[in-house]
Length: 122
Image (cartoon, rainbow, N blue to C red; front, side):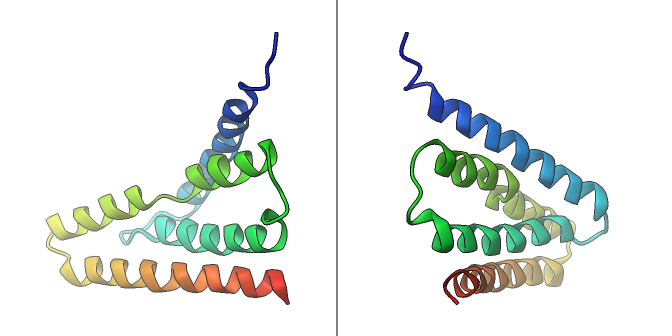
């Protein structure tokens, strides 16, 4: 029985479980009115994913790359949660916080990715 086609699915599931647990730990640690936990995981995730991709990912392939980038970072960071947090702020009439959430996440996540790349190639 050839398990080769199954391995990527197992890699994504394992990485996803680790990413989800890491995200859950951040959410349990950071509980405030502003969605700081989503903000933190997006920035840390963008920076770390960029660092790993530019330092090691260009050379990596196979199950490990799938586990880390699709599984772990797919579960750890998410724009869907960011979007829902922003919509909730808008629905609650917190327009300035919603705008701040959009600007901070957009600008600092890209900055995190630039920082990760810089750290990887320096």
